[in-house]
Length: 80
Image (cartoon, rainbow, N blue to C red; front, side, top):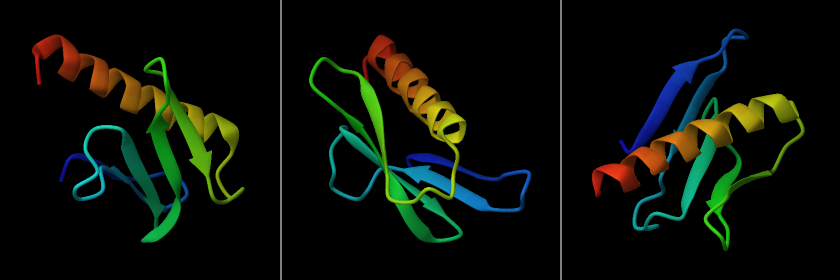
């Protein structure tokens, strides 16, 4: 899996992963196997969250976007 999977403090199973065949410009966010939205690289290289649900607070999405940004920046620095 190209991503992260964890259980949050409320017992939700959260997975942030690249969809199969999607290249490097998006990650899916699922919570308890339900699609909650995407984190997408927009023009200029910035990563932005597009939630499908209001169940997760904005700070939660910000943390996930930060994780994706850090991960992708590290990949770019390492050349892959």
